Image (cartoon, rainbow, N blue to C red; front, side):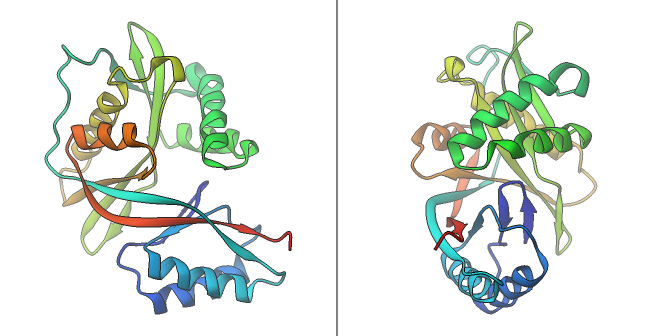
Length: 231
């Protein structure tokens, strides 16, 4: 399991029984209400049933979207002759305002409360885990990654979000940024086995194409749920 501003991500290897146990634990120990739950179908359903049943107030799981889990195979960065720009590490002094604004826009699109954006941005900048794509000195988008997870001797990195400003899309920047960040993560962990993965909205063909173009292969399908206490 991994938790973030987007909620809880269940490991693809988590069983239904494990998810049931985890749902009960989270219901009793975590406040406030989870923003979102993402996982393989069987595990997600088991978690949701247990979590909602053990919450102190009536809670319902609400289906949100289908997400595709991609895992990086052989990295294939786009040629600099076809995709302009370069990646750099975002900094507090230079990028806080812009990245917060972009994060608010991204959160509103995926249904996460906008008030969570400043904390997400500050946390990512503190970890040096947010990166800007610049074209001729002008930022056009950003990406980040979740804290690394070590699983059975392998380090797993999950990229996300990847955001390109609306006026700068369809220029290959998402592919360039994703490839550059993947390369950075691989380079920082050469001492042991590592894997780079990311989630993509199944309903967004442009983002799926961008990830496949740089070497990501479809691994599995997950589902995302939000939670509601209004009933």
